[in-house]
Length: 136
Image (tube, rainbow, N blue to C red; front, side):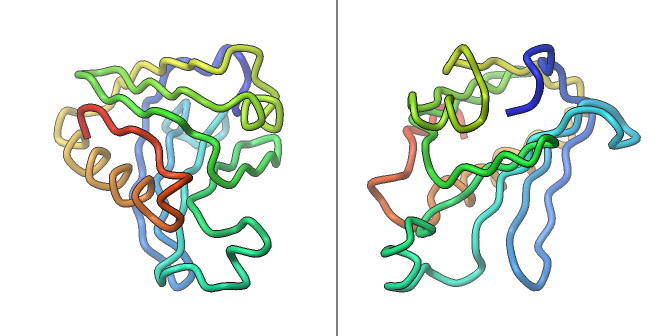
């Protein structure tokens, strides 16, 4: 997870490339600051993915941490995105507090894209790894 002082997002990206569907939360418009990336595959996970634990969405941060699954709850309420992580995910991502609220200072026009993108990410793959979604 981005640094502990990563509490404001000023740029949201939603993109589909040849390998994955990606939602990016960036601290600043230049992309030089902290960021958190959520991604999922374009096709359903297969048996090999299930065996290796890669059968869900993943989170990546600027420090190179990667976590598959591990989000228990996602809430989007107005200009605040709240993530509740499992203990394992919090440890893997280097987060002391498993509940993280992030203020969104993005244009209101980005809200529907962000909501739809996060809904797509967090409903991908293994149903046992899908978080509770609130406000998405």
